[in-house]
Amino acid sequence: MSNITVCSRFRPLSSKEKINHGDNVCVHGIDAETFVFKDEKEENFSFSFDRVFYEKSEQAEVYEFLALPIVRDAVNAINGTIITYGQTGAGKTYSMEGPSVLECDEKKQGLLQKAANGLFECIKSTEGAVKHTIKLSMVEIYMEKVRDLFDLSKDNIQIKESRVQGILLSDVTEIAIFDPAEALQILSSGIANRAVGETQMNMASSRSHCIYIFTVQQGLAKEKRVKCGKLVLVDLAGSEKVEKTGAEGRVLEEAKSINRSLSALGNVINALTCGSSGKANYIPYRDSKLTRILQDALGGNSRTALLCCCSPSSSNAPESLSTLRFGTRAQHIKASPRAHCKEDYTKNHEASHATKYELRERILNKMRERMELEDVKLLEELFILEGIFFDANSVEELEQAFEDVTMQTISSLHQAVEDLVCTTEELKRENKALKVRLAAAERLNGLQTEAVENGNANVLQKISDLLSQFVSWVRSLSAFKMPK
Image 1 (cartoon, rainbow, N blue to C red):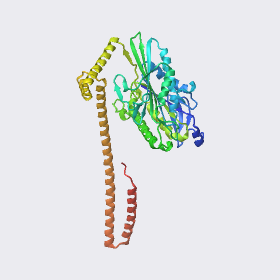
Image 2 (image 1 turned 30 degrees about the vertical axis):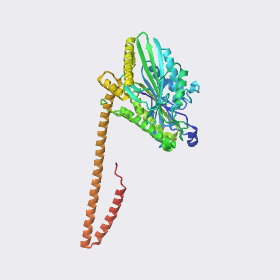
Image 3 (image 1 turned 30 degrees about the horizontal axis):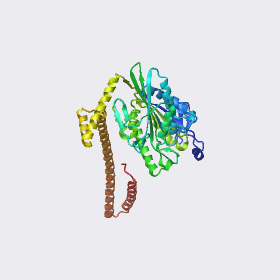
Image 4 (image 1 turned 45 degrees about the vertical axis):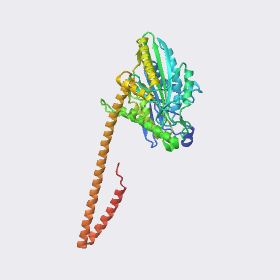
C-alpha cells in the first residue's frame, strides 16, 4: 500500500489581480515542501505536501517530480493517473497543456506533451521488448455525459468494469500513435472538440473534465509475456462561484454540473480517508461519471499523483484554501498499484478465442437474415443465460450492481434514522416551548382573578409587568427559527 503523491502549484499573479488588488499574495514559502497560507481573515495556516511549486517554477520541474515516475511505471505495466485540481483560472490547463499543445517551445510544454515524449523514450530504453504499441483515447465529461473527442457521434459512452482490466470505456475510439509529433497532432484535434466558454475569471474556461488515456502494450520475447500499462491524465474543470464568474444561462448550468461532480469527488475522498480502520466503508464511486472513471485511481490499482493548482492572490484566498484542504485530505488515500502482464500461452489459444467470437457472430448474422431482429435479441439473451454464449461483463456487473444497491439502501436507512432523530428533537423543543407558554398563561389568569377579587393596585402592576414580559417573549419566540 502506498499514498498518492500530492503537490501544490501557485501560478504568477494575473494582470487583473494586480490591477484590482495590487501585489498582495497570501503565500509565504518556507521550503520546497512547506508554506504558510494567510486567509481573508488574516489567519495563518501551515501546509506541507510532497512538493510545492511556487510562482517561478518551470514546467519541467513539475513534470520530472510529479509525472515522470508514473510515466516510467506505465511502460512497466503499472497503471498511473495524474490529476490537476483547483478553482477556475488557477492554471490547471496550463500545467497540463502549456499555452498550446502544438505551438509552444519545449520550456513551456505541459504534462501532456512531456508525457507523450516520455513514453516513447522509456520504451526505447526497455530491454527485451520485441514490439510495442501505444494507443490514445480522449474523452470529456460534459453535463454528466462521457463524450468521445475523437468521434463526436459517440456522445454518451458507457462505463464498464472488469475484474481483470478495471474501469473501461465501452466502444471508445483508440488511435495508434507511432511518435510524439503524431501524438500531439492527434491530441490537438481532440482538444479542439472540447467544450470551453468565457467567464469573468477566464477567457477560455474549461466547461468539462477532460481525460487523456495512453495505453502501452509491449511484447517480451524472452519471457513470452505481454506487458500492458495505462497512463491517464485528467484535466478537471475548475470549481466556480457564480458571483465571481458571472455565469448565466447555459454557462450557469455547466457550472452547476461541474460543481456537483467535484462535490462527488470530495465525498469519495472523504469516504476513503475518514472511514474507521478495519471496517468496510461504502465509497460512493457511482455518484458521478467522474468518480466512476477515477475509481481505479482513487484507492485502487493505480499509482496516482494530484497537482493542486492555486492563485496566490489574496482575492482568491477562500478558493485556494479549499483546494489546499482537498489536497491535504487526498494525501491519506492508500493505493495498491501492481503490474499487468498477460502470459502468451500460444498463438493457438488466442486464435481459438477469436474463432469462438467469430463463430458466435456468424451464427447471429445467419439468424438475423432469416428472423426478426427482436427474436434474434431474445435468443441471444437466452443463449447467454444458458451459457451457450458468454457475456464476460454481465456477471460482474450484476454482482457490483447488487452490492451498490445494498450499500445505498443501508445508507438511506441511516439517513432516515438521522432525520427521525432530528424530527423528534424538534418536537421536544416545540413541546417544551408550549409548556412554558401555557404556564405563563395560567399564571397571568391567576393574577387577573386575584386583581378582580381584591382590587389590589399592586397586583394590577404585576399584571402589567408580566404582560410586557410575555409580549417580548412571544416576539422573540416568533423570530426563533427551529432547525430543520
